[in-house]
Amino acid sequence: MTGHHPLKVDGHSIVDIRCTAEKIVEAFVALPIKGKNGTGRRQDQEGGLLSLFRCHDGKTWTEPDVVGFFPSDKRRKYLEFSQEKGRRLFLNRTHLSSYQSRDVKSKCFGGAIRSKYLILSFSGLPELGDEAVCLALAVHFKWISMEEAKKIISLSDNKIFHALMKTVSRLPASN
Image (cartoon, rainbow, N blue to C red):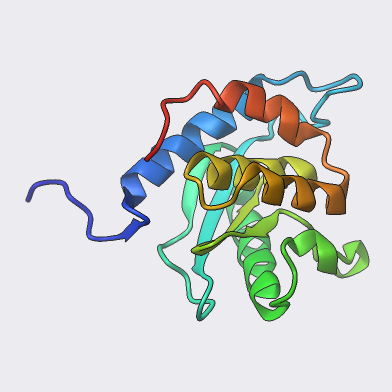
């Protein structure tokens, strides 16, 4: 066993993706909580579940991943939300973001985005934090351009993404 995992997206292994997601969530947690550029997160919101879906058929690419830390009693809730956001975005094929079909009364939130290869969905942080993490991950691996990210953040008026990207831009570059 070499430790090599057969799953790759655009040359990036699931291990690379998971490690980068961890660093992005750590960067999010380090952002100010309150204030004009604050994330609005609660103290216990330091992670969540990342779900990845294939764009062409909507099937999960891997099992959802725990990223960061969160209370164990939230696992089922975060899993359900992460899966729901990604599936809903797959069904709305012209949408770039689950924010476009957001319906808070029905517990359908933003936090999933469509990229060239995958639908990325995160749940566990405030809604715009979930979206910012997915966007930062997709931009980092060049699955979406910064211009595409700007289109998505204009849909949700996401003020967190740019602050997060200042930190994420310091991560080692990906091919």
